Image (cartoon, rainbow, N blue to C red; front, side):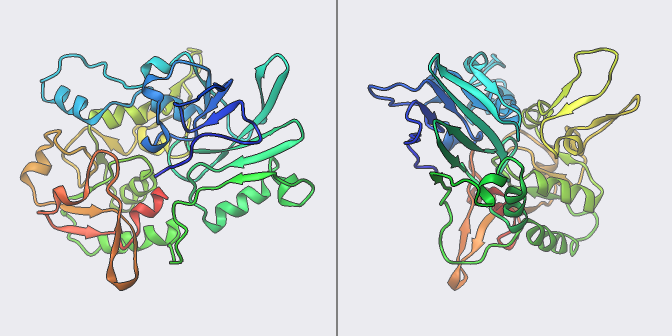
Length: 350
């Protein structure tokens, strides 16, 4: 849970991941690291100034809907399908490509340079390297600081001045969500253990991944490949992830631009003149499900299901740190058999 107040002391005219209570000095520009709700404080009523983010974050944010609204629409209680919470931000969300130093003019006399770096967290999640007026800071947002990722940052041509000591960052605004002294598995270790557990079940077993927030895409990819199965999601999720594959506006070319590395496998891609399907599907007759609770999936209602329950980690004394996630999860589906991921799945959320 983010407790950051949005203030970058070296650059007092900007705000990051906090969009209300600006006081006597309103910002000249704002920045959004990713779409998890604890970083969106104040955005539902935000009107200005511009907000800079990744292209994937922009596409997902503009399509987010509150759970009660989309549930009632699916049940026919609400008639209006356009319930996007942040659609009013369409004209002020400004996407910046990753690994590309970009000048941002705050006012005619003040310009900063901002570079977005992958945060290894969820679709579109980034860190911000902010430079200007002889100062430089790194705002991490939420990160999954695995060894390979740290190495990739140190080797980045954008960061090499700082990683080799040619320059020094004035400050790092660091994600300290997990600072306790206990071991956390890497994604690869976690996925390996998950796949070993899943393989113990009969070939007709149906699994449901209780992922109520963004950041479990690599679990989908690994399970879909290992079990040779598509993954049933509800239409809301499907539309969100399809927004990460943008078709060319030039009719001469059928190619798509994918905004995250997982997008082609999730929602499909064009190979020559052929459109290849992704692993996500609206077809309910598959082995893997990640559809939203309450959306009337017949397989979930009529078949025995093994639930894959995300947890953050196993703690000392046999206790688990549970990941509840956005929109619920956890205990409300526990009457069915549960396959725990041994601290695995929600490690992808850190």
